[in-house]
Every structure is written in C-alpha cells, then in structure tokens.
Image (cartoon, rainbow, N blue to C red; front, side, top):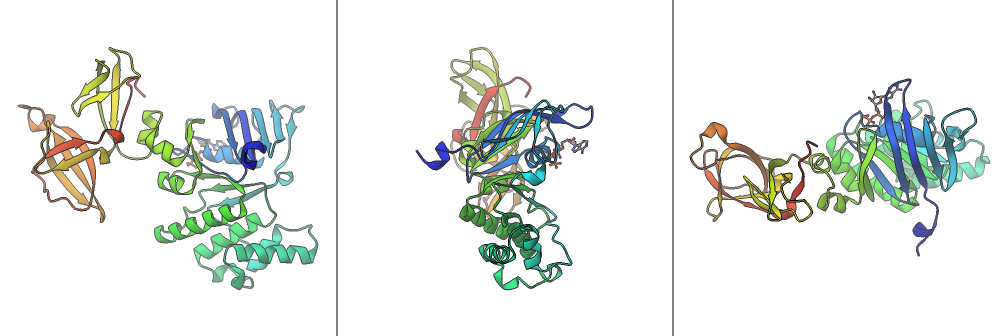
Length: 367
Ligand SMILES: Nc1ncnc2c1ncn2[C@@H]1O[C@H](COP(=O)(O)OP(=O)(O)OP(=O)(O)O)[C@@H](O)[C@H]1O
C-alpha cells in the first residue's frame, strides 16, 4: 500500500453543519477527506457554501456540529458548545491563498515571505524563505517591492508566503480570479506544479468548471451546502451522477420521455435506460458535443440551422428540431458544439447524429 493509502487524511470533515447567526444551515452534514498531497477543488454555484467550508477548515468559523481533523488530529469536535474541542486558526498548520493576494506593500518580497516564519531562528528563516522563493521562480526578485511586480509575480510571492511555514494543508479561495485570462492560465499551471512538487494537500474553491478540471485530483461538487459528487475530473465528466452535475459543466439539451422496453424514446431518439423501471418518466441530457450535424448524412432527424457562432477552434450551432408537419414556432431548440468551422449556414437543414457517450439518462423527478 502507498503512503497515501495508509496515512491519515490531510483534512477530514465528518458530518459538519454550519450557518450564520440564526439562519438556515449553509453547510449541511458535510463529509469530505483529502489524502496527503491531494488537490481537491470545491466547485459549485455562487452561495452554495464553498468559502464557508474553507473558513471552517481554517478555523475562522466554528461549526454548529461535526468533526474536523488535520492529519488525523481533531481540530473541532462537538456541537459548538463551550465543552467542545476547538483549535484556533493560529494553531492549525494551514496556509492561505486568497484572490487579492494581500502582500504587505511596505515589505520587500523576501520580508513578505519571512513574515510567516516569525519565531524561527533568523538564519534558518531566511534560508527557508529563499528556498521557497526559488521553488516559485522568484529568487531573483527577493529584494523587489510588491508594486514593482506583475499580478502573476505577486501571486507567486503570495504562494511562497503561504508555503513557507510548511503547512499541512493549503487553502485557496478563487486564487486566480483577479488575473486576466492569459495570465490566469500560466499562473494556474505554475501553482499546480509547485503544489505537486511540495506535495502539500490543497483545498481550493472555484466556481469555474474548467479550472477545477485542470487543477484537481478530485472535484467536490457542491449544491446547497452539500457535496453531491466527489470524483476525479474524468469520472465527473464521464459519469455525472445527477442532472445538476451535467448542467454545471456545460449547457445541455434536455428531452424527456417514458421508459418502455428498457429505454426511453425522445425527440432525439431512443436511449437505453437499463437501470430505470418501466413506465417512469426519464430525462435525457445531451451535451452540445453529443449532437453531430452533417449536411449529407443519413439520419432520422433533420434540424434547421438557426445560427452559427464561430469561437475559433470550435463552433456553436443553434438548431431547431422540427417534427414532420409541425410549424417552425414549435421547433425544439438545440445547441451543438462542433470542432472547426462547419460549412452550414442559417436556414440550412442538417442531419443530426447523436453520440450516446455524451448523453445521460436520469429519472425525471423535477431535479
Ligand atoms: N459572515 C456571514 N454572515 C452571514 N451570512 C454569510 C456570511 N458569509 C456567508 N454568508 C452567506 O452564506 C451563503 C454561502 O456563502 P459562501 O461564501 O460560503 O458561498 P460560496 O459558495 O463561496 O459563494 P461564492 O462563490 O459567491 O463566493 C451565502 O448565502 C452568503 O450570503
């Protein structure tokens, strides 16, 4: 067995519930465990409780109930009452990286990193600060002031400062959202490399599915205070467990039908549904890339091209699926995403083929 399989989790939440003031709970009975060195992204819509979860791990909030442990050592246990265990933030070995970096403007890069190393012998602290600045590729700028640095460089210094005290866990809250698109990609890659090199476990909040897919060993998808699915990015993509998990990652086409003969017949064709009982209503979610339009192909479905939106290496097609004899106003609107630039134009009729591996069938329970 590997170390990761035998060691205590770097962070664990067991049945943690928390809210603010007397309001409804924001985090609900949440359980989650990060293996040593693992990067987990908390992903979910605005207000679902991601930042609250991070603040609970940091000790900035005391939960109403549940247990939180770092490296197997309890930090919080109990119902939040005076008798329960609660280790304050400064006594948890946790580093933070938040979106506005907040470097101290009156301290040099080196002194910013040294700030987190107070209490260590001076010489050892300087050696550690220089080593961690080298890890993030900022050794040459140790004497610079924050205002002399680009946004990406400032972010790397903030990362060095967070990692300098050798935290057991790094907490990142939307750390790249203040950066513009090109820089964000570069800083994201550098940050991931540093996390992998230092093997620190990290819990990162993001609302950007692409960022979570890129950064995470596992994605914890949150909805209304609960983790509704936790899986690797690939599992999340190939085996979404709910309509919510499909919809959160992209726009989707949705059609419904009733299960008959082991499958469901819909306007987009017949889909196998071996796990659903006969006679129940089912909902099929087809990602835009599941719809493959061709100008000449043989298919049961003809769709009218409503608009063509080139995105560079991909094109989004808005289509209208007609039923024989039905007026245009009753067309079913569909969205397709194709690689490159198709040769069709608005008004063309295209034949649609459906790629089943990008379609998912769920019971239609209104969710
Ligand atoms: N200090 C607070 N006092 C009262 N309510 C709060 C406080 N902090 C957060 N909330 C509420 O808790 C809910 C969840 O907030 P939280 O910041 O955890 O969500 P989030 O998923 O991180 O959202 P976002 O992506 O918008 O940052 C929101 O409705 C928010 O208004």
